Length: 290
Image 1 (cartoon, helix red, strand yellow):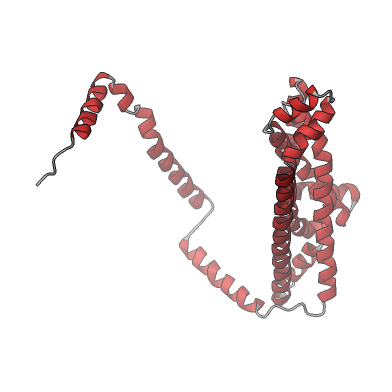
Image 2 (image 1 turned 120 degrees about the vertical axis):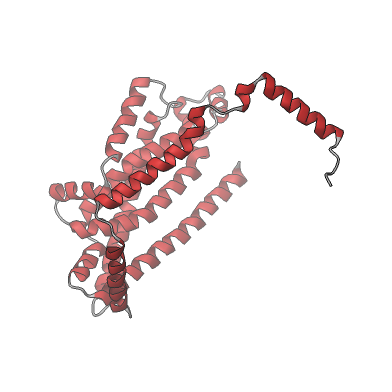
């Protein structure tokens, strides 16, 4: 037995039917809009299938690879530093130094360039566009490529690694910093300018306090990420623990490889924990002083 329809519900249904009759186009999505989702899914699926076929993927190879991976993992147990513990510790410290100095240098150099790339700081369109394209060009080259370039310029060693991370992150920080500056509220800047402050003072006291927690968060995240990147670029000769990792893998010293991987994981986790503490401390200080 059907329950009776309330007068309000019946009136709403009648109004909807009347509107649908008078404005049918508003209640019917265009054909293109209806076809776009299934066509997109079909094209993405076809592209994935073609890529798998083009690169020779097969379930047999995948299962065979998993079996070999299981053998390697078994050989890694238990992890052991052998007689290289202090060499590994020194190399890990070198990797952290590469990541820290590269990230810090990139942040310091990127801040003034990000001001040129921000529309609300520099109104000149030519300077703005030129700064953005310059940052895009630097950011478009991967850290590993920069490492290979700097190794040929300054030679093997950690200095090349520092320059590689600095160069790569310079372009990234310039973009991220400029976007954070553009998103800042203009009212504090107007207050500083109305009190007789200069444009530089408006940026220093009106914009920088707003964006500082965001910039710090980005720098800390990239320091954590660059610890991993410094490991990779060490494999190509830029110093650090990556060089030891590559050597142990080449010699199939799997217990030492496992120990190095655990050292890297513990280090990255510790940096992540400390970064979170620093971010929350800075954000809390900014909230109390606001």
